[in-house]
Image 1 (tube, one colour):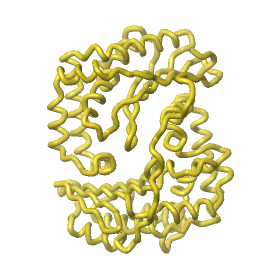
Image 2 (image 1 turned 120 degrees about the horizontal axis):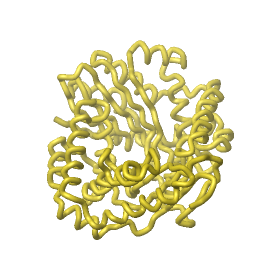
Image 3 (image 1 turned 135 degrees about the horizontal axis):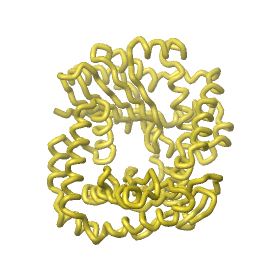
Image 4 (image 1 turned 120 degrees about the vertical axis):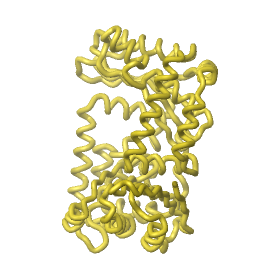
Length: 406
């Protein structure tokens, strides 16, 4: 059973006790993501996230890391446009200690001045690594053009902006944006709900809300519908992007299922037509991505320079063919993939935590497994084909990276 409680300060706690597990997973989503970065300080939210993990509460940086290891927390962190995201998984008997530790990270980080340069170097390495990855370089540029700079810029920023960030910038960003209202804590695994509510209230209940204006809605970057990045390579990297309905839209399942037919497994159309039949490239895929109010389909392929034009032509042909409808066997295959992914998600506390937090952010509620299953089962060939015929891609952004534009 999924439980949900929103505290008076605006923090929402979501939990699903799973007594048959020996562990507990959690995700803490703090509404201070990269969309709040000032225009001349892209990467500031990522800098803050890095600094928040450099000691918290009574623990300095070294003591904090030692306690993470002692408690046995399997942790990851990332920054999205909307959130600083702290994920963890731990043995059930150590969950209370882990939660207290992360409460200190959120509410009482040390943000030590002496760790500024070490944090800066970590982020510099992330930026330099991304520069060495042509696929990542192209897709980041496409997202920035598609969503606009506020929501589309790389959360890690760039070398120029990272060099300018000061400790005062980091401290002010924390004081202004890190807050309980809008924060989501999702937990799945072996725990007792009433005990968790009481503990979260003790840790976060006395924390006052802050009156913060939401970041502006995502808006496309004005400019041409095609661009090229010069890059000395034997390959040409191709990216396409177009609008689709966001996660909260009633037609989301039909729209996103169509993209699953296009690129969702070894029998998908792009894989079959571009790679298997013609051998034009090794990597080709398409996927949906959704912000709160806007979503896109992002399609990518990397081909040799001589095969790039034909690769693009075949990709565009398959995208256009979607409006002609899908076949019964394709609908059957995508339902099987959806059901399989749902089962896999149920068997991973971490994945289920992410799903619950994502549901609440986009929908304002959490769907049960039965509801998700029912939505998938309700997909019909007639309904899908009607939607695809009426909603073909109308405008498309194209980006290429390589020696020559297409």
